[in-house]
Image (cartoon, rainbow, N blue to C red; front, side):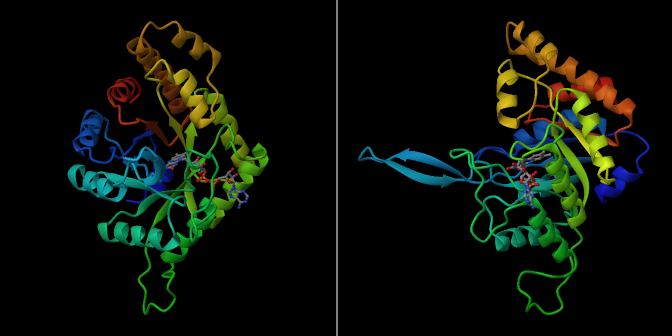
Length: 317
Ligand code: FAD
């Protein structure tokens, strides 16, 4: 099933969510435990994030620090296939520029193609955690639009090695990220929307937004996109607060605004359990309003916690 087609033709608001691969060395059962409570809401698709390597410092026996590169959450391709086969549900692995050469990406895409996974979300990837800057991997891509071009070429049977005889075209359908509050590195909103339009022109068929806590950001973003001639489905991505600390950490990590009314309510909470309840109530209201606005789907960022998402879905769907 091609998700872009599903989004274009749906008469109701679909339900989908995003999961993170477990930390290296952990069992896949945590993923299944996150999915199980959400199955009754019939997710149309499940996204699985991808993670670049990180630099860590390990203490050597002589006391000096050794720099090491570690991918803390590997397994996106395998987890996507495992979910698809266990639950017979569509999966959307994320594919990144950061941390990968073009050849490595091509190989990952060939694996996905063989596994029968044809929906992907194409992203540049986060900057390096230590330096907070994005430097393309040597032999890799700088922008998501370049990676989309590589995949669009594969869809035409054009692989990196142009000496392959009778290459088989792939049939990937591509989604991309959009930012209702602007991407933090963009000089202004107008430039950001132009870049987004470029990603659509390169072959992306739908947009999933960064999380936002005030629906007005989403409504304004959709209006700007439509005025700029971007006509593909724009899926709102939302996340319920589940910890008291989220009121500070989410704006810091994702460059999003926390509405004053929400932060006041969370600050009053005595513990995380109370904060989680506020998060459920806030996101339920957001989702109900988005649904009545007629969005084709609501995409939930779970961060592998699904009991709160299940409560929201029960109230909304
Ligand atoms: P791009 O579209 O390439 O844009 C990056 C920046 O470059 C923007 O400021 C843009 O305006 C600018 N730009 C783009 N093209 C050009 C150009 N041609 N010329 C000049 N400027 C340009 N990160 C992960 O590491 N793993 C994930 O699994 C993951 N999943 C995500 C899912 C969603 C729905 C979202 C919203 C984000 C996700 N991210 C993930 C985070 C994402 O990788 C970062 O936000 C990253 O900083 C930007 O990715 P992008 O694909 O939007 O980049």
